[in-house]
Structures are given as structure tokens and as C-alpha cells.
Image 1 (cartoon, rainbow, N blue to C red):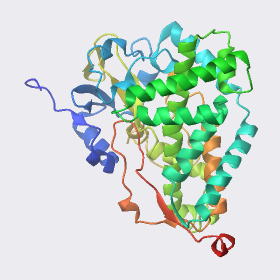
Image 2 (cartoon, helix red, strand yellow; image 1 turned 60 degrees about the vertical axis):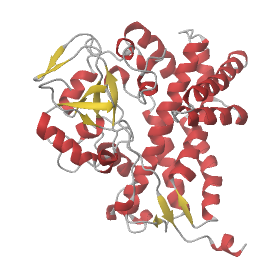
Image 3 (cartoon, rainbow, N blue to C red; image 1 turned 90 degrees about the vertical axis):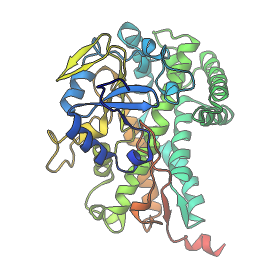
Image 4 (cartoon, rainbow, N blue to C red; image 1 turned 180 degrees about the vertical axis):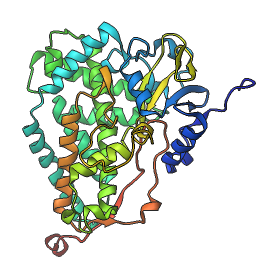
Length: 399
């Protein structure tokens, strides 16, 4: 650290994961709207914790483009945040005309999803998962329910066969394991390229087919990275949103001692979590083209500026009062890169939660809430596990 430079706050620590809102309050007290952080060792960035400043940045792609190519030249390949942040030919990591082209194909593919069919799909996937839990009387809802449900829903939305879906799962799992990341990306790419070839030849009613035959005329590499983005934007956020909402509903009396008798709905719980503990707590990363003054802070050119969706949602300037039914949070981001799949995500998550609580109304946490541990990391708000217990059904107990 050079002389006079302000110490940077690391976001990937267990301490931060244990009490992020305490950390955000301290950041705001010491630094105001713009906080000097370290995404991982040797990777400096600025975290935005002011709601209005965040909206200004998110709606100004000319000064704050999402293209990281200049930045990543100076980042070593073994940096743990590089795979999550580096450039790919997809809507998330491009600006200008290329972003528009990718976004049009991506959005059209998502807009073609039949929401009535999705509701039925989630019910069909949830049923066997819940039946397996009922036979045990206890479960980890992250690994035994939220993750497998979300992954299978995404497989069906993109039109994966069981075989290709399994290879996608294997690749995605390895991709997040830094030891096997390269092998994971290769496995994932091979599976998805096979799917793309299949859907170019024999289109169906699915996301892959709609993108493959869109007027944007995406090539195979561009198709591949739209699909990687679709899985990446689906798995972690929806898994965490299911888990974080279930934690709230199981531990807050407003949702009823028995969760079905509560005064507030699942949708109310979802919106509260999207305000307070959004599944991607810190994201929406941009890279200023040149040094720029925002509020009273100079931001260097080509250094990441990340929006703290969680901190901005709880900015004292906008917080306060009853927010039931209020959806002004930034959990879906804003501006030209706002999430185009929020209706699908709401439906998947709400249906998954309702199916589980209808089947297991007496479910409760197996440990005190304060013993729940959270996965460290600069981007997500994610539990390690959500252990619950419930009476086994009489029919199953007698077997």
C-alpha cells in the first residue's frame, strides 16, 4: 500500500460474511458513498453503498461500461475472482452495440418462456425432492432442495436432455473449484456446444432454440456464453433466494408459528429478502473508461466499481417505514443490464417455497438461527447449509 493510501476493506472474509450489514454501516460511516475495497488479494475496487449514486452509475453505461477487457490484462489467471469477472462474448460483459445485440437475443429467449408451464415444471421437480426429504425427517434445504431444484428447472428451460444436463452440472461444479476450473469449463463448454448443435438442427420450445434462431445470428461461441451466463445468473441467485427466504419465514413470527398461518405471504417474504439479504449482495460491476469524479471521490480508469445491492437497499437516505409490497430495491440491478428474467425467477422461487411449506407445514430449524453459517465471498449472500427437521409422514414412518 503506497504512502497515504486508505486501507482497503476485504469482502471475502468469514467476518464480513457473518455480519455484512454491520460492515456496510461502518463503511458508510468511514467513507460515505464510495468505499475502497479489495475483491481478493491484490484486486482493488470501489464499492458503492449509496442508493442514488448506484442508480446514477447503473444508468450511465457511457461512463461506466461493463466491459472488463482492459482491467483483466493486469489480473493473474489464478486470481479467484477472475473467472467471475472476465470478459466473455455475452450481454453481461459488453457495452454499446454488442451489448444490444446480445441482450436482444437473450431477452427474446427469456420472454418466450411460458410461465404457466414453468409453474407446472417446478411442481413436477419439487415433488420427488420433497418425498425424499419426508422419508428422513430432517434435511439441508440448500443441498437437498434449493440447488437440485433450481438446476433441474434451468436444464428444462434450456432444453437439456438428462445426459447433457448431468455433464453441465459436473462442469459447473468444477468451474467453481479453483483446482479444476479449466477442466470444468471444458466439460461445460463441450456439453453446451452439443446442445447448441442439437437445437440448431432441431429447434424446440426452449431458451437455446430461441437464441439459436434469433435475428441477432449468434455464432456458437456467442451462444455458449449466453448459456453460461443464463446458468450463472440462475443457479446461485435463485438457490440463495429460496434458502434466504425460507430462513426468514421459519424464524419470523410475522409469517406465523406454523408458516401457513402467517399474516404475510411468500411474496412479501421474497421482497423483504430482496431488500435486506439479496442473493447477490454485491455485483453489477462496471469499469470507468477514464478517471471520473463521483460525489467527492475520484474513481480510477478501468478499476472495478461494484454496486452493493444489499447496502444500497438499506441506505438510511431511503430506508424506513413499512416496505411491504415495495419493490424499489436494486436486487435485480437497474439500467441497461437489469435482470431480464425477474418474472421467471419470482415464479420459480415462490412455487418452490410454497410447494415445500404446503408439504411440510411443521418444519423448523434444527439449530438456533445465530448458528447458521454463511459462505464467504465478495459477491453472494449464501448459507453454507439450512438444516431443518420435521415429523416424518405417518405412511412413510410405517414402511
